[in-house]
Length: 136
Length: 458
Image (cartoon, rainbow over all chains, first blue to last red; front, side, top):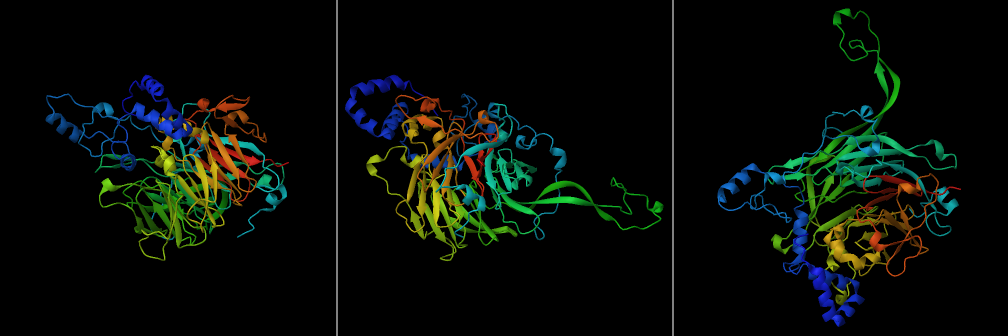
């Protein structure tokens, strides 16, 4: 999640002041939880929340470093400091500047699943048969 | 269709009515170490139609198929064990150059085709591509070629002076998996479901916004049957979360949404099924509405009963059974982990509130099962209305040890043997479970291990 404010103390203060509302909200545990969340992240829910989640969901996927974007952006922002990627995945490549530090580590070589144990690879040779052609 | 009990089920009163089932540990597959490689995270579990084969898919794009041993079935000591039958790399990581996005090789779903000849077939899918795999056995090989040596090297033709007929000789069983069809490039968004039609010729694939209908033989085209993408993406309010064909009516399918609704569509009504035939939605009490309401109402899984009369949905906190003839509310609701309602704030912060739990029916539709946190899983008996919480853990490792029921203490004084909500490990989630179609054998996937449990046989 984005910035965490030192909200716990704030929460307690509020509790003392608005004891009546807190009692009512405690009856519905969800409302109490919502109050906690709003206290920690006051900016949450100001954009239509549904849309935000959904957009994030639709854009799922690991973004890669694009040297073209990087160099273009570097040229544009010669004098300013390069911003790093925030936790918010942006929606369009090139609008924010990916940096080499954001490069994800290279995926390790594919091995046999541990569910199948270690001795099996020899018994399951890869098959190279024509595909999409005849009756399956 | 009605009497799907095996003789064993009637005898032992399995699955509701009669005696309660006693679940025993049977097997566990996978590495013991706590350091879990991402590729080993299990992402789907599915029995085939006979229950003889059990397939798993993982985040590394691999499929492992286990086969039940036949020997012990005759003895009444225990049912056969599941051992590795075949394993193969189904999907590889790909790269979308246009969007600079990686396409994960994680297997989202596996669905078996019913067996029609000696070979077995299954569909496996990642976010973008569905593949039809043929798994076949080879236990004979030809020997005695004229032009080749036994090791495959070609002989010098001038040394061939006699002619012989090659013969088939037995060899060690080899199980081969080969991709027979690749269904690609039909989904802009991420595929969450595949479902084979009861006509055994077509199947559907669903992503966040669209559902496509395919023919198993044809890979270069598919029909779009549902499209909920708004003209302006800013107006997007809900996405498709799961879809399934009706088990008997080949014209009927359902799809669930992130807003907690299920739509039933009839393909005979029109080519594009954007208008539903039935809309299943439980009315919400507006005074109970909170920031979390929509998130926890999102349906993560929808499954028809074997009979086709009911369907089950799983949202974050509950399992609901719907009668297809009644749209305005479910006929049964079971609370999976209601004690989490007072923890929603922290579950939102650690993203657990977005976890997608699956659910499944037993063969007779009398018991339903779903997973929870702390490697707990829950079963609800629809007839006796009793429920049980069990744990998938290596501590109960001895075969035929009966699993002890677990209990979570929501608040107040914790009794002995109970576990308090704050002690639950939210990294140990059971998202995928499967129930053998005929027997009381269940497969439960923890993060990287597969547990097999059976009911106590004497």
